[in-house]
Image (cartoon, rainbow, N blue to C red; front, top):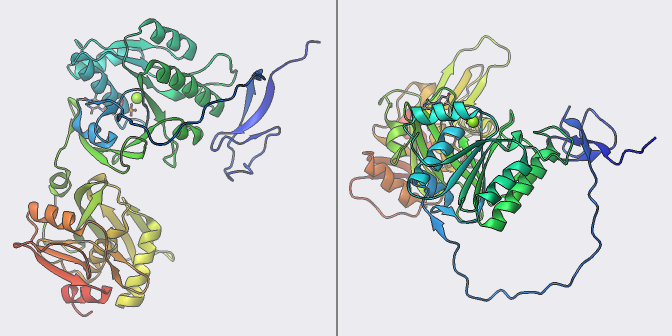
Length: 451
Ligand code: TYD
Ligand code: MG
């Protein structure tokens, strides 16, 4: 009997940990039911090696050439445009608009005489054509191909030597035939991404890989995928909502946590260049339980509305639910309000929502959240036309946060004239803005009564 050369192993689809035996729980990352059998052909390692030259740090370097993606909000997230030869991974929930955005991107660039190719592994050529027609982009000279075999894709790109930007939609549908595991498994995703990125770097092509995300919002497949690329972008937005945000979480060529804002309409994704006004546009003033947070996303100020609702509960464990913020942070702020402010939420249900589908990660949002919660509890609106920012500590102290000046200026620009901010903040006073500095959460009683 001929002995099989392939190695069968079980690979955790969450972290890439490989084991000879199947197991219900991964020893490495503790995830359950994540092992999948994968058969891999072993690679014959070449033994030859040669000594390499060391280099010095100091030498004149020209920054990598960039060009505009023709979508300004995307340029902003990328740190000023697309970098030649870079690899970008873009993740997001199904239906969020990844394919739409990338089709708009390749079509618009091709109209500007940049040679682009779009490889679809998920949809048929007809489906992509239909979408292009709907977006009014049918005449754009983009090269389109439906393919999933990485070897074929690489040969095709090498044949068409003039391609400057390549989109792979999605990396989970691609497979390298030398590996027998099915597409979407860790080894396939890793191998496919490796092959494509290596080819792109060799040829100086920009490659954009679409990646699926799992239930918990990670790009499916191993973290190694994020290590293999230069830039990782996440596409996010509220389910059913129109607003879409694209955020960079890793960028070798620019800052991270920049966001670009879009609205999904009949003609695809439309850029929103002044997102603060968008997030506040539906705001009802003088309603209790709301407050406006002057936040910063990357380098850009972004105002958003925080809404809190407190309702009686019949359950032994009253519900606490958050959309757009961290539930642990909510628990902390509630505890601080309870102990340091003297307001007990007791058996009430608590809901907190950041309007417009925005996700806030900054500790600077604490004060605004606390203000909305207290306002809801005592049924008193926040001061008219006011914004809040500041981090709350466990003793109830309000801590200064960065970029006070930028936050205040944006608030003033949008018509706010009162700001409740941490004491010792660094800012220049603004003529039309009343700035109230507070150092302890207790001082919110000045606005919400002495209850
Ligand atoms: P899609 O780009 O296919 O998402 P992904 O590739 O991230 O899975 O987005 C499809 C959704 O967007 C779908 O629900 C329809 C909607 N859509 C519009 O509302 N307007 C449009 O012009 C297009 C092309 C799509
Ligand atoms: Mg898609």
